[in-house]
Amino acid sequence: MQTLTEENYLKAIFKLAQNNLDKISATAIADEMEVNAASVIDMLKKLKEKKLISYDKKIGAKLAPQGNKLAINIVRKHRLWEVFLFEKLKYTWDEVHEMAEQLEHIKNPELADRLDKFLEFPQFDPHGDPIPKANGNIPEVSKILLADKKQGDTCKVVSVKDTSPAFLKYLNQLSIVIGSKIYIKEIISFDNSLIILIDDKECTVSEKLANSIFVK
Amino acid sequence: MQTLTEENYLKAIFKLAQNNLDKISATAIADEMEVNAASVIDMLKKLKEKKLISYDKKIGAKLAPQGNKLAINIVRKHRLWEVFLFEKLKYTWDEVHEMAEQLEHIKNPELADRLDKFLEFPQFDPHGDPIPKANGNIPEVSKILLADKKQGDTCKVVSVKDTSPAFLKYLNQLSIVIGSKIYIKEIISFDNSLIILIDDKECTVSEKLANSIFVK
DNA sequence: ATTTAAAATTAGGCTAGTCTAATTTTTAAA
DNA sequence: TTTAAAAATTAGACTAGCCTAATTTTAAAT
Ligand SMILES: [Mn+2]
Ligand SMILES: [Mn+2]
Ligand SMILES: [Mn+2]
Ligand SMILES: [Mn+2]
Image 1 (cartoon, rainbow over the protein chains, first blue to last red):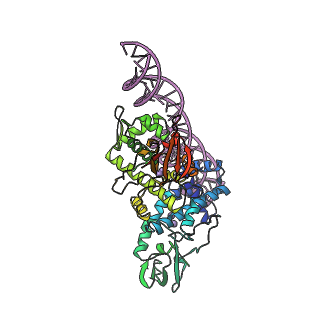
Image 2 (image 1 turned 60 degrees about the horizontal axis):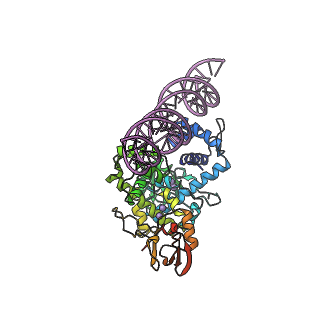
Image 3 (image 1 turned 90 degrees about the vertical axis):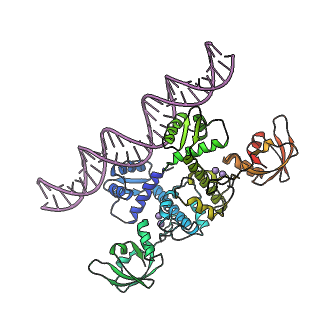
């Protein structure tokens, strides 16, 4: 049985692994989890001891099969709970992440599957992230950023890269939601800000914002 | 903000207070929480420091207004989550308590009210315990035990005193559920065991069982 | 090949919550 | 009232996770 903290480390390593970096270093984990690198080293030893990861300073941290399975289940629960909070309890997409951070640690072997069934097997969470299947498969999703698109392109918002309330509330303000149609009217070469039409309503957004939205 | 552990102590004190004992001693709390009395003394100091309780060895522990409010909210969340698990996720009544022990600590100011609304304002949890209202009021329920009834009496199961899986599974086996009609055919004077009709089906149960079921 | 910077690691210390093993009160019984 | 049991408390120690402040190792840049 893992502690809540161990689960959070596994999840962080899993998340970093998605970015296909050449290695997952202790400092990268420290940065992701907002803890000190010394704390990370301690925990990496512990997780290695439990055979949930491998770790070597040259190679970095890697999830072992058991650790990977655990991490995927945590992500699955996190995203299912987010759907629950959003769909059933009517929280907004900027409110659900914080609670899901707590709910993902609720222990019960059947919980994920029961929630999944109750929610009628949702494919994506409120931020557009794919929900791992019971067998561990994770549907592929677009990794194209709005910032990768060119002037004149039209695309559709599929997910957000950042789930901070500050960012999501700004998107609310701009009426950008999952599924919004975006037409790129102009890219300002000075600072790469974009003049776009969001479902036909014009507005200007920064390059930073365009780097935080995935589209297809 | 309280830690999960502090919340569990407040809840234990709240629970003991329901039994109208003359005082809530450190040992009673230790017994309820299955920890050592030395640990309890440490925590009582801390909770007193935070003005959540009063404590004096002669008078015992008492919830201060703020501590009482917190305790009721935890109980409210516990019971609402039990309803959710039972009604929506189709867990059995012997499975819900353990998960609710975890879920009751999920932090969000609106959570209890949103769950309450989603569940359509249930009055009782799957064990027949009353769910505190948003304002803190707790509906009164029968405190009459099956063991208090006499030969020839007919009554109805309103709640169970014990939520251990072992007990609840035994009740499943006997087909005793909340609402079951029980007729007391005979009380054996030798050991106070009871021959009863449960919704017209005859069986024999121990005094211990009769002391664990509330009826009206 | 040096020098410098970043990353990894170790050492030591802190808090929360737990324990065991005394010790001191308090209460109850003889 | 003396004695014995129960309850309360203190002292000291342990673990998990975290930190800061070195120190060591590795990688990069001159
Ligand atoms: Mn999230
Ligand atoms: Mn999400
Ligand atoms: Mn319960
Ligand atoms: Mn209950």
